[in-house]
Length: 81
Image (tube, rainbow, N blue to C red; front, side, top):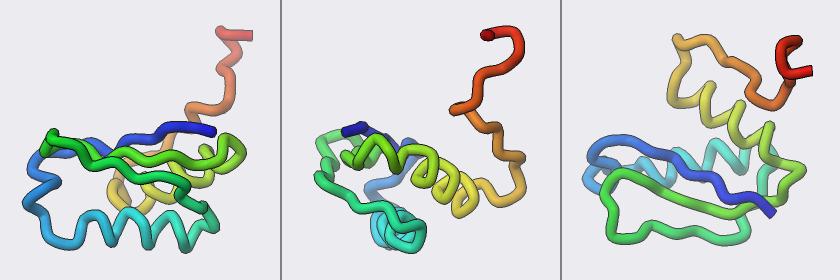
């Protein structure tokens, strides 16, 4: 299993943000096992299967940062090898 957090200012006050996050994950075929939205107003945390991490991160990045280039954090750079 893997823990993923979506972080941003005023998330708690932004209407529809949780729906947007979970619709994006569902459309990517990612099943959310557990959801946590604690006392913090800046993050939404959830648990998914480890095998779905890349799909989850990629789909959320595309949804919320459409104009920013996606850097694949799951591939090792030549410097790390």
